[in-house]
Length: 113
Length: 110
Image (cartoon, rainbow over all chains, first blue to last red; front, side, top):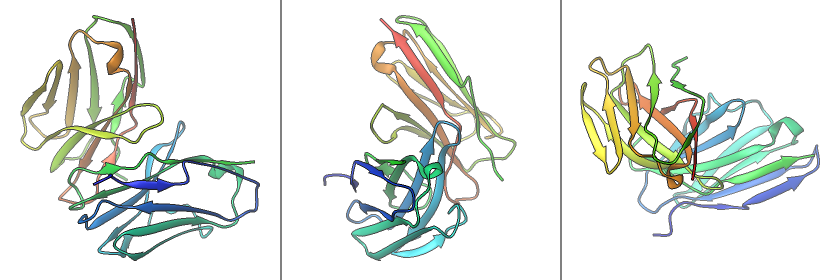
């Protein structure tokens, strides 16, 4: 397996624009997680899915953020409209269970100007 | 909110030195994991500890889980430049989702 695949690796966008981040988890993993990492706040869990169903979205900052998992091999994190304070590295991770080894993608570095 | 505090936040040392980083919480963990993250990459699991007092070794790295399962330490012997990275601990309470610590950023100079 190629591991967790995220795209794009880098995204630069203007404030107010819609941003969509994509993730392909490892096949067979039942859990998918979206994290945001910044120097100030560290690695924050935004939302996670179990078998494509959102279980906990308490980490989603506000209504501008939304996540979907239409099938077991694909998930998106959307920010609309984007703001400069959304600039961060966004990671997707997958795992067999909610608390076992998390396999991370390489992340998407988002810059909102 | 369950917090995992790591210390020190930053550490810069010379090659060959020993170091210890800590992960502390006021809550009991079911298990605790240590990850290392290199620049431009996602975190990668180093070890999982599940039993209070457990010690695991991975080459020059020694991981210990506190007896009360509220804290953990990572000791590196004779650090090398390849050890440079962000070290993250992550714990779960009652088999719930993982909570990641604040991280220790290690720089080892040749």
